[in-house]
Image (cartoon, rainbow, N blue to C red):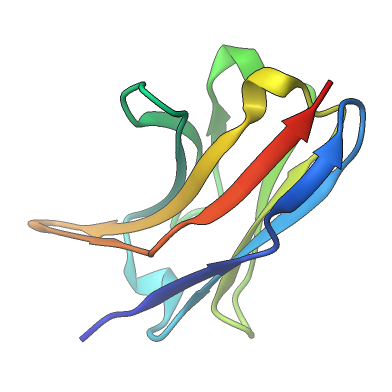
Amino acid sequence: QVQLVESGGGLVQAGGSLRLSCAVSGSIISFNAMNWYRQAPGKQREWVAGITSSGATNYVDSVKGRFTISRDLTRNTVYLQMNSLKPEDTGVYYCRASRTGYMYWGQGTQVTVSS
């Protein structure tokens, strides 16, 4: 059973920074990709950033230049460094691990950005 545990969320003022962590119970290199999603109140969950098993990264346009996804293979942890936060970044942030035919989600961590 794969488990993902997110942490690092909180309340921050606009312009501030947070670093989210996603600790995985298995080896993250075994997954095709690790992704961060977020869900704002009343909105659908949206993809934010991803990193493939080869280390390639990609971002939704709204966070490019502000967010950075990275990983620590020794700790089986994926990070999302979020800088220059905006109120519209508010939401529950989820980590997802995927391999062919399987997806695993964490429980989410709340990020609130005040104006």
